[in-house]
Length: 129
Image (cartoon, rainbow, N blue to C red; front, side):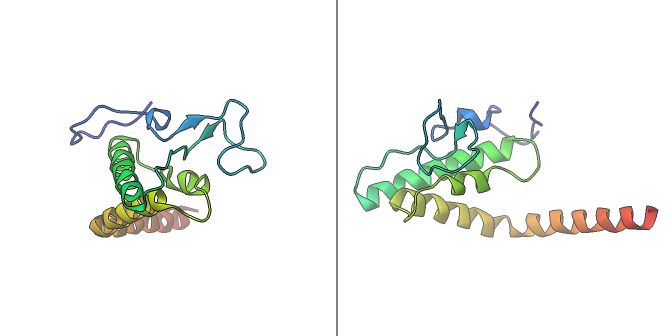
């Protein structure tokens, strides 16, 4: 069950509900690797227009950030999304990652607070042992 962020103004969603996540159904896309997850975390149609594709990526990043804001605290899913992105990156991926980068900059203080907490908890565990 997902943790509900009391400050969230949106409904809780699951990773599979995001518009760019697809069930593989035995298909290998977009990057075939061994032991793939049943989900493809980056199934996006491109227009071929770089500017338009960047705008699509930005919209998808905001969708993802909304998901992360309302989901349980933890490591997130960004690493799985990036792993399923095609190489070389297109405008969609550039737009997505640029918006994620802006969000990371805006949330850097919170990331430092979480890192301090994890470090502090690790120190406390070491003292108890």
